[in-house]
Image 1: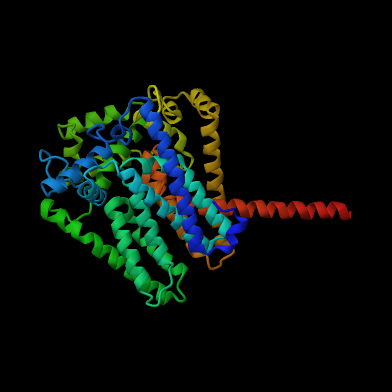
Image 2 (image 1 turned 30 degrees about the vertical axis):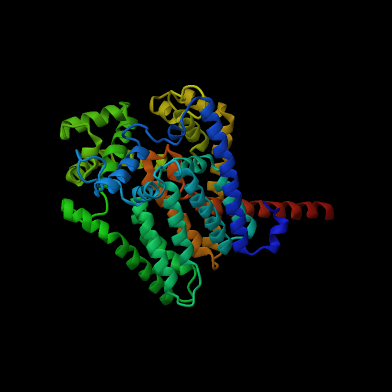
Length: 476
């Protein structure tokens, strides 16, 4: 890739293409290394990319959904369980398209390289609108080399396409056009597509609509653009809500909120509170209230109301404890180790030799009261400790950037504040599931931009103060 000094002769679009090209070349090399390592262990390529894994894995369920869309024309994991409601059809439709064109899903990692390369270019193109060019380049490059980004591109999971469509929507909001309404229509359409990949985006639409106020010349123009964005987003997702209503009587996009609160938040909180494992708590509640352990059955709209009521009863019995627990787990997302996550999956996929790592992580040790062991676990694994400290530094830099945006209001302040709220909204919705750094991916571009800029500003300020103090000493 060209040096920073020589990039001054390139337009922003050309720099974006260079960064995308760097991503493609790097990932092809990394994927080649993965293939050689896995082959040396006797692992098939299909197994390396998680095809043919456990029936409850994300990849396996996406594959079943894609195959059934093609063969029986219905969106279901299995005819035994009926229509699928929790998972949404965007990514399975992409896999079905790959099967229809190529007859195999082994091409998916290489197609997803294009998705991730597009995301890298968009991070730069969005960043350079509001920050100096070196900041935007640094954010794009760090995103590219994050291990969990590479892993998510390697296997058939929804994140690469979800984040590409999400960032495409945000990029459109700030794009000038002769017809001012066109970028907002495109933004709403792309955002709606991102919701079909991961329904978590649905709850962020009103927040991202506020980005219109970061670019418009008047509040009326911004309000009109935000309204267009929301209307197009709603029009895009309504057909799936109508499908759910016709099949289940529920006019909703997915029962994910109730299911996740019952299946993840509540048992994890009870584990933290009582010391009983979340698996045991989940089994006991499933048997007591539903008489089944079949996750495919429990995640339908049929049980959503009861699941929500059960989870609320448990949580509201200890509201302050749960608030502290949820906040701590949400903040854990900002210092989670992608190295740990990716290494675990590479063992699991048969790419790295030997058995995958076993045993409790630092969080599990804390829940067991083993604070000394948790301290040793955290501070003796140097690479992951350095990674965690760097993420913490980025978070502090993001706080400083937001503070300056609120204190010294300028043309970028609105965008920075919305990005700050977006980052924390994602973290809050992730909550007890924050151990998986895959969930950091949607907020990572914004955390990188704000964090790197904050570090730059703070360093420049400290350097200027040091020079002034040095000059004062010399003059004295």
